[in-house]
Amino acid sequence: MIKRILLPCFFTLTGLCLQGQPSVLPDSLLAHVRELSADRYQGRRTQEAGNLMAGDYLLIRFQAMGLRPFDSSFVQPFQFYNRWLKESLTGRNIVGYVQGTAHPDQYIVLSAHYDHLGVRNDQIYNGADDNASGTGALLEIARYFSQHPPQHSILFAAFDAEELGLQGAASFVDEPPVPLGNILLDINMDMISRNVKNELYICGTKYTPSFRAPLEKLGENSPISIVFGHEEPEPRGMDDWTMSSDHGRFHQKGIPFLYFGVEDHEDYHQPTDDFDRVMPDFYVNAANFILESLLLLDEKL
Ligand SMILES: [Zn+2]
Image (cartoon, helix red, strand yellow):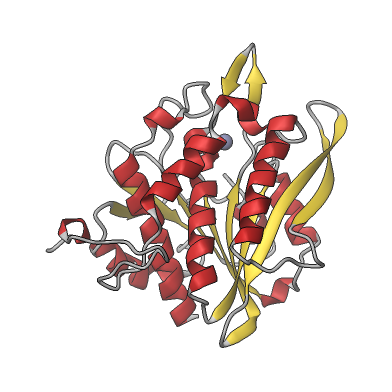
């Protein structure tokens, strides 16, 4: 089998490979993660200054690439009660969309949370993999579609307060900017930048089996291994990822989801989840596979 990675590929400024293979821009993708996981963002904890900086970073880029806002703003603030802190907190989802050419009223949501754990015991939890990686891919895939409009509308959602109980996604599905019935699917990215086994998991096809075969086939041409699973209920709930990230809130509302992510590593929820642990080739290949999956599903839905 000829793997795509063996083919020489020259990127244009639009993100379209000259050989016709759709692609994110690797340098931009990595630059987003380097930036968002820098110490000055202080671990992007909801409501804190570093988190607001990260939200502004996304907002400026959504604007610059010409995404459309809902109700004239990319910012969707929400409040929630935090049981551990026993206080009410305010988060901000950053949301925009590209209008579909054939089905403008039908939406595919692409989501990633941008918040992380903040600072604990004077140590900054930079959350490079969790989840600056998904956030960077969200930005680069949004840029691709802003330049190559899809058939269905694609809604790009950078969720806040995932680490505090999937709160941003909960607020989004409770007060959606478009009718929930018009959302066909949520594709959620959380931790996609490193894996020593070269494996990227897709979770969710158990609930929507028709997605499995086309994604499996697409995976055969990817330089990384595409693996399905982590969706079977079992007694302790550790291995079932159905509710492990924001896609769970869509699932609770009966909306199909696909979650892309890697298995936990030694830096998961540690202050060592830093940019220098990202595996650039794996990350670029994962982001490109997610872009290709989105193109395929846009075609098939
Ligand atoms: Zn996390």
